[in-house]
Image 1 (tube, one colour):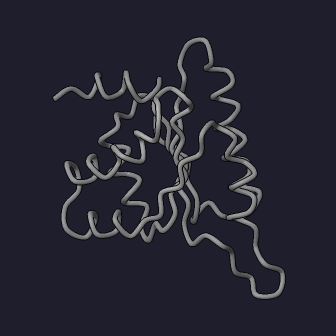
Image 2: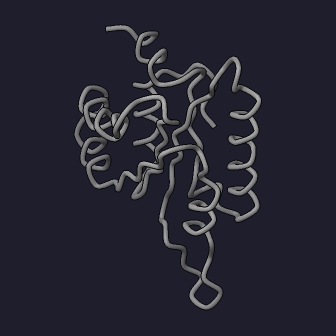
Amino acid sequence: MSPPGTNVASSVESYSAHSGLHLGVISHGGHLLGDPVTSLLPEFARLTLTGEGVQRFHGTALVPIDGVDFLPYMRVLLKQDVESGHRIARRVAVITDGDKGSAEKTARSRIHDLNALITATGTTDLARVFHNEFTLEPEILRAGP
């Protein structure tokens, strides 16, 4: 789990460094219109990554989820097939808001539940939850130019 207050640029670096990442699950929590996170992440990657990191990022499927109900998706992606032992996802990164303030308790619960699922499915080497302290907009402002 990323430390609270991690800025967007370092989250993108950590996200891409989660080696072999092939699937990213991203939430904008309904705070922005459209799919700005999906649109902004490639630019953040371009600004913060080099060489192999950029290539790895571009080879990643970004799956925007309108909201924060990641658990059903994570269950499907991380479930191991009983016969083959394979999973749908090779690696999964969840990027979500920390929602410090009024929604903080809900955010902490969401992050805890995701990490509990990752642990319960034995996929701590395959899946990781990244979060900021507030929401995307304040984190961009805090990161500065």
